[in-house]
Image (cartoon, rainbow, N blue to C red; front, side, top):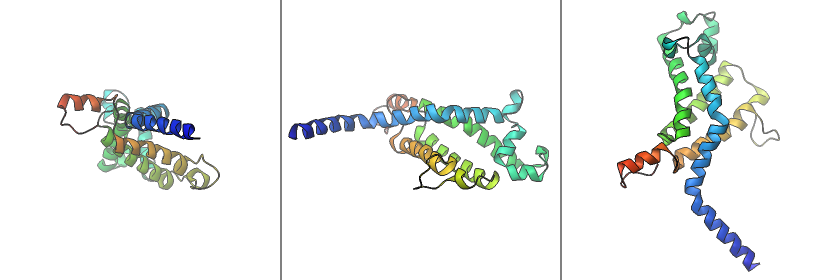
Length: 188
């Protein structure tokens, strides 16, 4: 029994030594594998036509972000305010820039914190704007584990929270920037 406990302790010590670089690296890998394409596709689909489309979101972007406001103006974007345009444009750009920053490990803590805010706003819009209800919202501590909001997005926010707390890990632009700044730089 003593040998078994000693083996367990040795393995635990090795895992603990690997945790500071392994956990954030795996969190970014999971984000890339599960959410990056989802957010990139969603963001890129919201841009308008041509090069000016980068500053003129598609009507579908407004429907996604402001569904009730769009319905109120019979889906005529020209009747919305500059506020609607600014929020839609910022949200569209955030959907593209934040996932890329997280995956390459650039300003990872800040990008992950912003992404947590994005997921929160996305969830609120889903409930109050798009009418997501009941089983799609879900509940914690129940048998089903596949609810769109409370179950899935809790894991998204947890993975992003790991990156906020632990940084990007060793294989990242943050780490390269830290090396460039010198040994006095804060950990990435």
